[in-house]
Length: 143
Picture 1 (tube, rainbow, N blue to C red):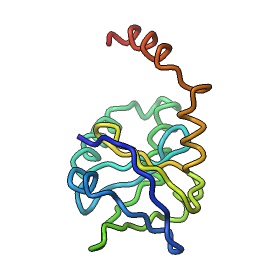
Picture 2: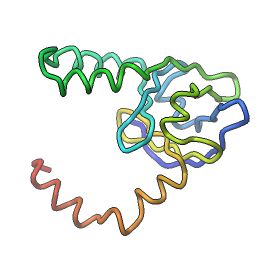
Picture 3: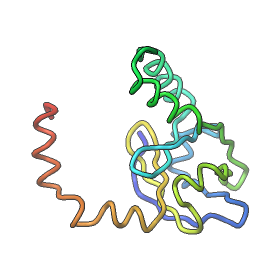
Picture 4: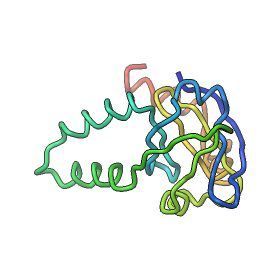
């Protein structure tokens, strides 16, 4: 399971180091794509295949479904780690997530998210997120 929060810097070539705890679960090759909330999503090859299967079940006749599939698949790229645990983030994905220097990598169960450090701090702030409110909302989902 992918968990934890890690801060790292991108190098001048746009490479980022993955923490060893994340590398073990993600694998040496993985898929990186645009994510929701302005971050990037990273999936192991197995989890990506599961996600793709779900996307295939969406109705082609539904515009929202087509938009959803395009959003995730158009930006997707396979990444491979080098011996130092670095991988290159494609420029279109760096632009999408406004990744320049500082990044935060978080594990969220079946995927990682890569955030611009300032965006993550703003998203994760007390003004934006209330644990009590999240808990209340989860009851509606049966949790």
